[in-house]
Image 1: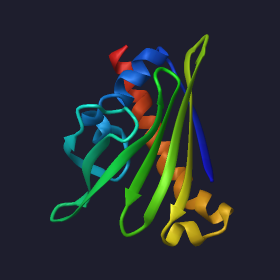
Image 2: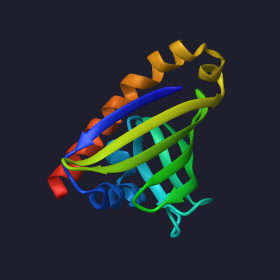
Image 3: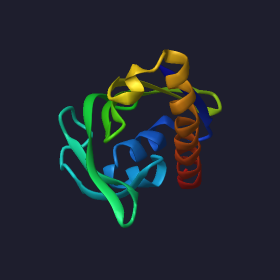
Length: 144
């Protein structure tokens, strides 16, 4: 499992406004290149973001599914990154005096990465998730 955390100088509400906007997904999720559609009920459990990964002309269509959602607290996702496999990503927000502490954990659940030992999974996932949190931080702090 990979665990990253970030202090965002914005309110938890501002951070969750971005997480609840499926159309903003490609702006902060590393690898997502475009959004094709977002279910109207996003981020309610079972709803999906329909996105593409890769660079044109080698784009692969995929989806991310909301597994659990606690407004202003937690969002758990099933992420698909074919051919790499599937994983579960959890984002947990805590209000702190400086703003929002956001913790992101990711566990590969199947595919080639899931067969790697935990330390090697972390080597593959940690830098990407660190960049995703950095992008999310920039967006949230700019908007607040």
